[in-house]
View 1 (spheres, rainbow, N blue to C red):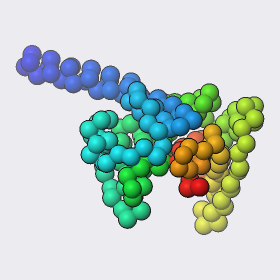
View 2 (cartoon, rainbow, N blue to C red):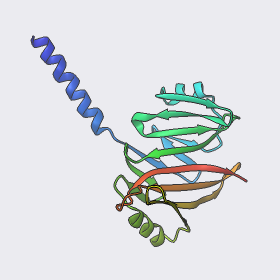
View 3 (cartoon, rainbow, N blue to C red):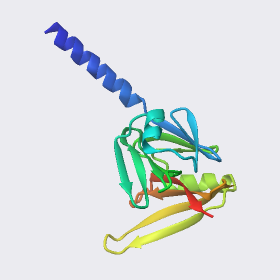
View 4 (cartoon, rainbow, N blue to C red):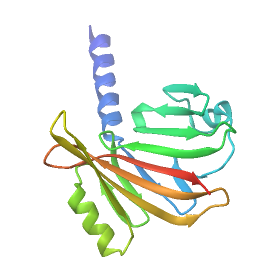
Length: 180
């Protein structure tokens, strides 16, 4: 019985530590920091090579337009072109504590208005896209930024999506390469 209690306490402690280990990410001018290493957009990786270097993904999907690795516990999905170049990453803000977008700290719970205010303060150009959904009587707001110019393959873009409710909290941040 003592062994069972000890094992149960150990498992609970490990789960508590894991719950506190919320990921924080940083987006740089050329890519993003993942597991302490900078990954540049356009870098070629096979799925196997990426997972060998950065850890096994929770899900791997191959499609004609490319593939992606889903790290559900980390709250991210990494997208690859058909040529195996990294071309984008999605950050799910319900699983991530913080994203540093070149000095703009975006945290779970931030709203459309707070992020817009930070972008205006830093004089970062952005476009507001509002989609109205008549069936649900709601709207979806997206902020789109041309980000940090060019890398050798693409124009870098950031899209920030918000919830459809009155709070308009951030729900998803996409950082991706758009072909030149």
